[in-house]
Length: 188
Ligand SMILES: CC(C)(COP(=O)(O)OP(=O)(O)OC[C@H]1O[C@@H](n2cnc3c(N)ncnc32)[C@H](O)[C@@H]1OP(=O)(O)O)[C@@H](O)C(=O)NCCC(=O)NCCS
Image (cartoon, rainbow, N blue to C red; front, side, top):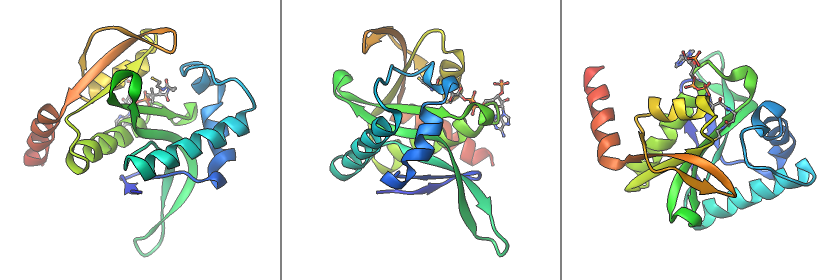
């Protein structure tokens, strides 16, 4: 299992102890409205999701992380703050491929945190896991989500269906990611 630090976030696999905080994010009305329906008791569903992610970490070597605020400490260290989102990579058998997913508490949106986390997830997927390609899907009406896909350098693919919904698909391959990030690293 892998933990990653970005300038403002700690991305780490969640445990059962995170379930209550995860409910507050995942079942926030401003988040829930954009994700597939999750019927049932939220805490129970959150615990199931966390367990499924943990299983994917064990068997596949990747799964979504919880995104926690990274709080600087005197002396140069840091500590973990509250859970503000989830982000990461998930293998979807329906597509025989790996998607990037993300969701953040509404009060943290519009601050670039989702992009910061998603870029770390893509870098992990392409440079550490050596995945050939990563895709993303969202409702066509979810402009914030497909806007982020475009900012990440993903290209619009064929529209498709997921869990009974019409969705738009965006794709990114490893050579495209490497070329873009190599250019950016050379420029800094
Ligand atoms: C989809 C989602 C993650 C996108 O989050 P986001 O905050 O819009 O995305 P970003 O992190 O790229 O932030 C971009 C905004 O932050 C601003 N910003 C502020 N500081 C910034 C910084 N330091 N760096 C980058 N952008 C910054 C940008 O200008 C931009 O503002 P704008 O939206 O007014 O143009 C978020 O809307 C969400 O969680 N939605 C609910 C769940 C959901 O839909 N998930 C996806 C399901 S498919």
